[in-house]
Image (cartoon, rainbow, N blue to C red; front, side):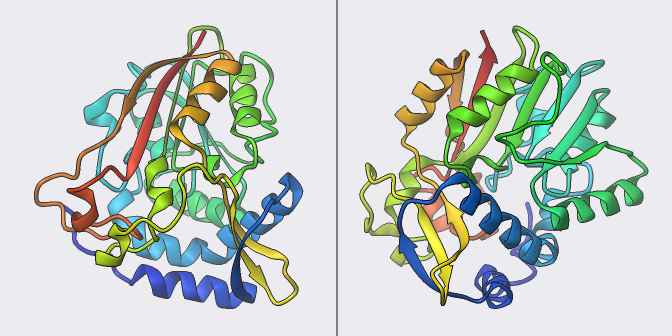
Length: 284
């Protein structure tokens, strides 16, 4: 199993916050334009530190669904990808797409952040796997209808957009009928706890049913980071409304011997309640 992170997560976040002038936290409504600007700036500012902290765990050409270490090579959530055109939404440094390419897929990777895509280009160069990289907002995918045979997202894009239904509708549009759409997100129940991997992260402080976004702001009140909360039911209803059939919902257990702390994920919390939800769906 992996070893603890190379740099404390709190230090990494502090560096990005300093670059962006983050000075406070708010819970308030945030529209799509403000959210996109904030999260583009955040991931550009954090890209280098994120890769330095998590790059070894994620690998250059590996498909890791979540901090619990579930790998597509073992889970086969997308099925046989050989000869299939696969879209990765919110790719980060695109390790998943390079794994898909090595497995025989024709993978295309998208991300909002140019900083993350810079690391994706460097990963392409290191591995010699030339995955096409596209900078795009997940709510506006720049592809023709029916362009792909499968789509996936491993903690990419969905927590940072005001409307998952809009993203789902876009994914539905670019998929061919019967294609899988599989994505992982922070388990919705984690919203009620502080973002703390230690004992303080075991005490409920936030209502599960409060969908007000978490927002970090600068001295002028401008958002520097935005994250949205949905309940499990919200995801299920949005999938049904946009033409996806839910086939499975995985809640990975914390693996024995897994010692890595990743942000709010830790052995302490992982043995008590799930940290990740993986939705396996199919375009109806």
